[in-house]
Length: 82
Image (cartoon, rainbow, N blue to C red; front, side, top):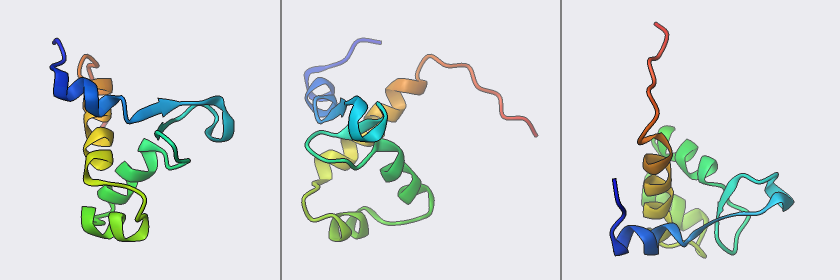
């Protein structure tokens, strides 16, 4: 599925750098990984709490993490083992 301009702009907020996060995707200009943000959200931490704990982040950064995760799994077939 093609990305629209808004999605492209959001994804520009995510970067990958081998140092210091071993190539994991991070919010550009930080060492906060997409994985960390998703983990916090998965533990029921609200967006407002994440932003309170990380005042240099924005709502757009959080949205970028969610969009990045969605794009990564978009074409992956996944069947959890029950």
